[in-house]
Figure 1 (tube, rainbow, N blue to C red):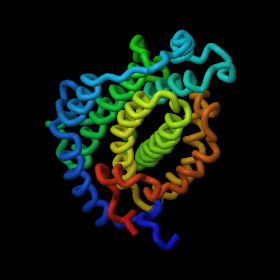
Figure 2: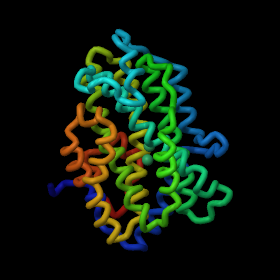
Figure 3: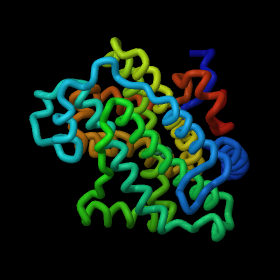
Length: 297
Ligand SMILES: [Fe+2]
Ligand SMILES: [Fe+2]
């Protein structure tokens, strides 16, 4: 494809390029999220956007037939996933994905320096990044509410799993940068699949379909920027490790969420992750997101 606009996310970059890209990302992220409200783990522009959605709610034309099936399976799968309607699987899967994200950021928030103690640009970027992730959990919560699920509780994982998540951000960069990058990439892959599933499953629910896409887009646009930002932490050896990690990471993570394997082709998701290059990202998202300079053709 001679006309491709962007190069593989695994494209190598020099140290100098990466330093310049941290500056560029930092400028982007401040404009993108607006003021950081550290006590609330929130950002001004994201908060306003969520409030706009809450002030203009939409509802399903036909409410979910069996919301109790969602509530019985959303924390742990109790029923045979094959027995559940795709819409229920989609919603419990969304909760489970967001819950992992929530647990990961809760553990990190208390470990990484707050803004007052962030002296390097990388630390500042990481603080805002975490605040954005908290906004994503709120957006996911709003997606579930939009489908009539207003009794959802955000439940911690088992103490052992919570502990593992808490250790992660304490690890030195050369160990955690590649997994952190691959995790962001996995998010983008999942959100793209989810976006397409909205079209399939909500054919008779145009208002909710549009709203869920708007809510998801708020997340995906951030995550596309996170993919580039986390990639920017990584040198040549780490990039090889990262590409190698896509398969085991996606496999391990999605094994833990049986809904994903029921709804999507995980093998194809892995291939998409390994081949990711921003060319599939629609223009309206690119305009609001951030892409490393060395990934531009
Ligand atoms: Fe996120
Ligand atoms: Fe992210």
